[in-house]
Length: 539
Image 1 (cartoon, rainbow, N blue to C red):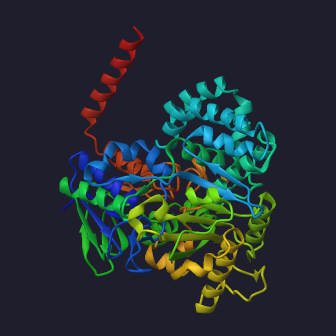
Image 2 (image 1 turned 90 degrees about the horizontal axis):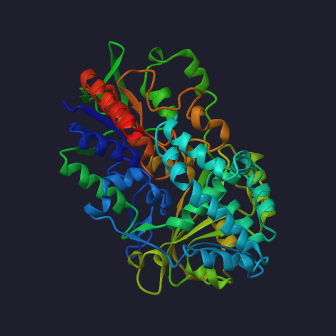
Image 3 (image 1 turned 30 degrees about the horizontal axis):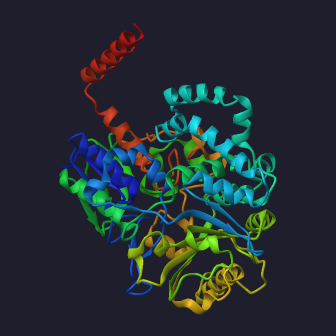
């Protein structure tokens, strides 16, 4: 009998398993799909000569994460690669905002839109440099991050206190207007806010856009050499060296509760897998509380709040094998790993408004990935392995382009949407479609079939909006990994701090399980030692 059973071999599940194994626990990970990785996997399904990431590709949060750094995945085969530039946002007039790891290059790019905007970018970066240690500590530790928040508050005071706090909760449109005179800086912030489901007018979208751009400025948007699954492979190898086990093709359908405590799981095949100490669930919040657990084990208030749980936007993705590099009209876009495609701030707002009205956008905002530009191993020399995704409503009432997309996502819907995305690329890269060797369409139902956590194509584990963050994530009053069932811990992106590949929800859940199972005498001794160290330091 293992000490812990982890449901799901996504990055959070694998991080949780590794943290437990480091503490000497025996761990068994059960994964529904035929291979581990969750949304961190790649294949050669578009063309045998091309590597395409199935879901996520760029990992600034992984590069910044102290959780992943502590696991040293590079010692187990992971290597990172960077594109020459981090991100580009071209416009149809040929201008282009560029985010580069060299701040001089970023600033120079923004000055081409309006002289002085480069200096404004440096000011935002100075604030980031001051807040970064405390902000990252608060982001990647369990909620509430008391000590990290105290240290962050001191740095916030030095950075302007309430004025800086106001800046971070601004809508990204307003933040851009206050900080920049030209479009370049505004677009870098707003495009990054829309990596999540935050419209340019959403409260807090400014802080999220600032965080993502500053992560890119400092850490870049790196990719694993050979494909995103290389990160998964490193975590699996590490776990196996510690005696942990990953079993694929094992769909868990029930968490077994006995005596008021989670004691194991039951698979769809009828196997009972007991857990001596804990069950950790790297699954979506509705799947855990609305499926894996019987309702009688949950408070009525939680079940009522579950009906108010909000997913982030649905996602539609296309992968391509291209016979040559993308012919961008704005040449700087050719050097960027990530390219944002929207012709200005108003087009971003229009896109988000159409989603809010449950319309399929007629000019979808695209996040476009140039993977061979980022990692030369992804396709033959002179070609490009590329993808783009866009957001769409979960419930579709109309097609803003009046082409008849219904939301059934049958073959006709999928082809219409993929063609629309390709036309959007053509606006910024005339001749793009002539380079397509083959393409693969991943509509929302396909994404969910490949990873059950991506319900309806939602990739963030729940909305990033302020009403479902911190103490409200995933539900009011449930900001920690502990669940109402003793011995059961939420270890997915549905938990604080949310989506992205950084491992924090998994690590937080594992540490909560370790704390709960720490012998009382040891816990008291550790508290005394910590107190002695603090008082000694003060002397």
